[in-house]
Length: 222
Image (cartoon, rainbow, N blue to C red; front, side):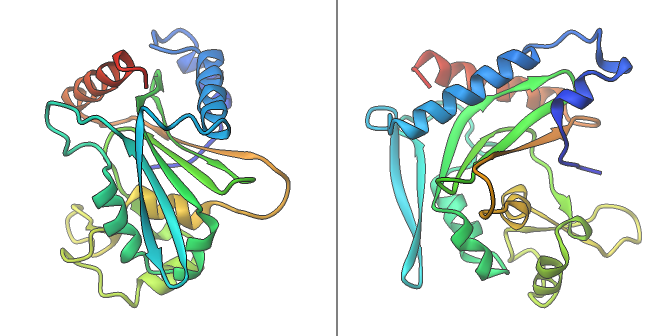
């Protein structure tokens, strides 16, 4: 089961206190603040390009790296993939919660936890990181989304859905971008929502690729 939770609470549990990690909790907080500062200061001119997904009279700006990774990019979210997922997102009334999506080419993990995304409520900005590919159960996506998605005949032609691989299970699962959009709240106090995932059965080879991509972009100033 993939879950969203407080990373500090998980990190301080006894079974994780002595695990060797690439980041400390304070370093993750610092990285988050760095991302926020970059967003607020509009420092995208050199490192990022932008595109727009338009729906009705509205639009969502997609900000993505200006340089391409020289290796396989299938594990990364690109602007075309983001537009495709947004175009078939079932609950259209959720889309105004997002003004822009920043595709941040950084892999941030601590022990068995990965940072998936940040949502800056004040500016309605979603910062989307590198992480192990995974899907979420539709049962955890909220009643409104589940009801709407259930009427969309999910299948191979729907990029946001994935059929369960469990034997005898007809359940469909949803893409992380859909899951996050369905959960963020754009009303109330000015806060930053953080999304994490626990790594339990993820492929170590994929982790190496994510690190390679992250280091490549880090060397180029991302």
